Image (cartoon, rainbow, N blue to C red; front, side, top):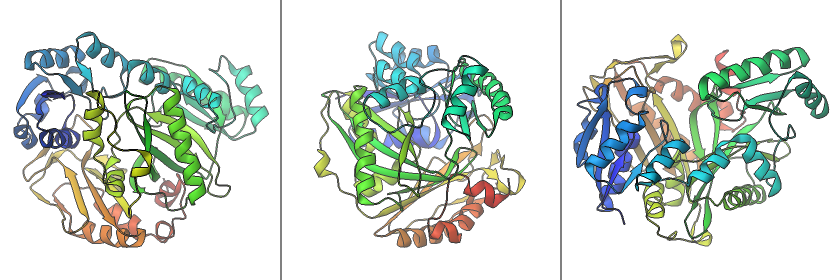
Length: 448
């Protein structure tokens, strides 16, 4: 087992990893930018090292600075958390060349599953359901038009690299396909340095359902059931829950087995999320993408399985086999997570940097708050606006929903505007209560 690891991330996920490592008797080193200097969570690490100014490109994304910190601190491994460098194959390769264990998948698996075209080709080979569409990258308009006519509109143009809704365009006819193709390619090139795009059939009223998997270096892969991430706005998740409230037992089994099959085909080890779109009418699901890292919403899976995903990632990276078999993993109750962002929903979700003078987090049975925020915390303008994750767990979905209502009512953040009032409305919305939603529900509801 490792004796000392470096955490190449910040905020809530850095604190989450510190706590997991401390329980394993592993020392931690946290890197931070000038914008995060003085953050309360830094004191909980055994060592903290400043790696640059506020902009992420000069700190949390600056590979030479992170590697230098790792070598100075004499660490055995690096945990990248999520975001930043978590799915950067080059960073993983640099770690390997410096004899520092990357707490994540192999470079080869990350490259294969991170490229959506290659991932889809692997999925097709191993009978994982995928959308009809191009078998490889789109070369020109003529090819795009031919494929769209064959599979039928609407279609979606998607970047082969990246995610988060960038490099994606929906087209309902040949005119919108032409413009969407060029704008998606330009956006993908600007965002990811790769203009490669492909085309798939577009499912207009889908649910977003994803499967958490864990694999070890001995070739064992298990799933920890699924999460429903349908409540989202502009491809950014707002509310996640586990398990998916509309899945029957047979579909759940097929979904989870498909995720495991794909991971095994890629020789995957570490934690990953295999994401699908589900047609709630037909119960048919289709591969969306694979995220080769721990997810923001991993706590809901931990709550329904009792498995510490972060600790398991560390054990896998150290070469230990999975400490459980698939038959050992049982689904227990229902969990819901609300992402608390420092954004103003009344003003087009504008981020709200500034100082929090009052932060009263809820508690009680079945309530978990993952956050790095304390009274007096100054939210920097440089990074993602999420300041906390509120997670509840209860025996049933309705009990979990009522528990979330209570917890949100207790949650006080002042004077910064947050998404707490929005979550209180969404949790009480009749469509959420009956789980009659799709991935565009929130946008329709907001009228934007």
